[in-house]
Length: 167
Image 1 (cartoon, rainbow, N blue to C red):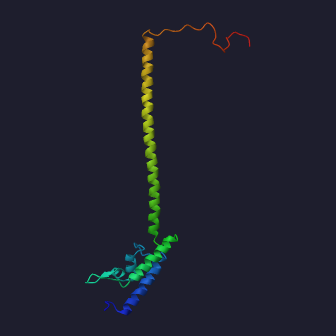
Image 2 (tube, rainbow, N blue to C red):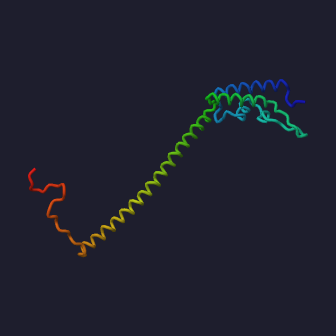
Image 3 (cartoon, helix red, strand yellow):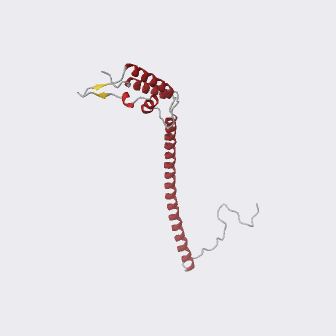
């Protein structure tokens, strides 16, 4: 014996179908989503009617509006597959996820670049310190008199012209 009269069931199914059509057109209530919970609230029916129930003997029976829930989900998936998103928040979430992934990739690239630049700076400072130490050593050697100056060449090196020769 059903818990709801046939007239009330028919009236509720009509209300659910009307709410389903509105929601799939994108007419969502403020704060609502394109889901079964909002569908039930918009139609004014209990949400539990959209789900299967268990009998006392453990067998399962379909909820009185379960076929409408399946139709709603099927139509919603068809719209999403066609590229239409009736729930603007779902589209916004998808866009934000893409933006987030792009920003994470940019941050990762920047972190890699910064690590490379830090390593370059470390090598450059090390080379500068080594060059500075070598210059200091050479200056001490020059000041200590252990370095001799080579005499100036008497003749010009091969391939160069002496300064007073004719062209």
